[in-house]
Length: 346
Image (cartoon, rainbow, N blue to C red; front, side, top):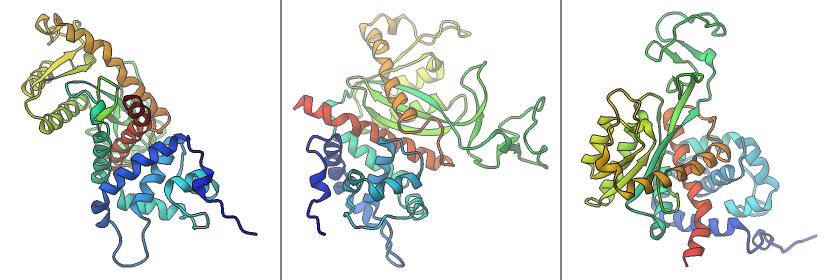
């Protein structure tokens, strides 16, 4: 009639989530003061932010596509209960309560604080001089039919827009106004999208900064400059290099990066009108070739985020929520890799 076996005993000692949970627990303890201001002072008790964060990590690690399925797993999966910190007989939240508490408690500041503390745990593993930057397209949770004129009546039901000129300055999505019509290439399909940006260090390919922006032709370079400025503020005076593809080979970007004290190891775009902004003064050094060799290390991060973490097409709406998700998923990517890297360096 009674069982005295706890969830702690059920989880194997060598399970990968054990090492990840130790890192997560240390990080959450450091954030306890930030969480104190999030607890409700009146009304019904809210879901503890620590449990929300652990549950969101599980949703990313196991590619759970909805909060309803996550709550179902938490109800009967002992591993999930153990990781979140739920007792064996503790009731599970309803999906609506979980979603509302997540939107209220887990904001951009909490996600970035969590991400930065995870990065600090890898300080001894990170290169503080050589970085790579890139961006990727994130499809918005909005259909083409929702892209309607900003002023005036809707153009039909949105199904047939053949021959109609639709631009972001005259049209907007009624479902997700922050999403912009964008395509990565001249021959690609234009979709309602956001852009996700990553800055990785070149030693182990860990993510040191991440953010999301609206989709436009300058967003990738603007986000790169912003992330490099944050790195400069953390350690001013240190010389750095930044690798990037030929999309970053513009004179404005190269000039600003050099003003930040960063050497731009950008792939030359010799077919651009006016030629490349990178000349032999940069390409003749061995470090340029090394940065180009290390540049593909950013692709596994994007691949993991878009397939495992469901960032190929997000189910959230609004730039603030997309940015929160990109930053938090980047922290999850680092947490997945850190246990093995820390064990190898010990």
